[in-house]
Image (cartoon, rainbow, N blue to C red):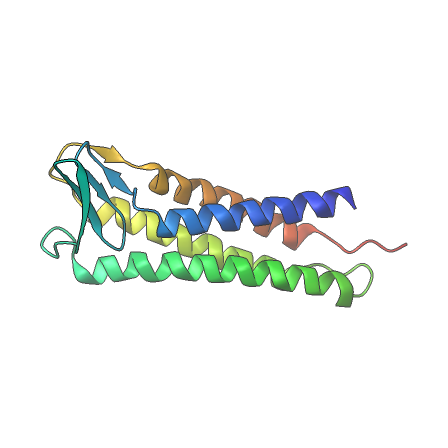
Length: 159
């Protein structure tokens, strides 16, 4: 029971990390700029102002890939949690949580694609560095992979 509680807690943590990575505006940061996959925040005076992403710096096709796969990673992770909980009550003894593992592996693949495309295609001319949302995306990749393997290996115990 303690193992199942730990798995559910890790899964919820992973979902939160995925949502923060997808929605927060800190994929690329400088002192006066904070960029995510949806827009850009620029510091003008003492105020932050939202601006659309310049498509000269962000090729539209690649940006849409990053956006879509980030959202899909969140959706697959949430579905995997619901399927896992449902399978706890419906699976027969000794069966594996394969469907939950497949959904979690799809989430893992999607966030890996999003972070990889962002890394390879968006060349930044200004100084700065990757922000915490970018780092959270890669941490989420590792956690979703661990959960996917755990779900595929995990068997429902017989009493």
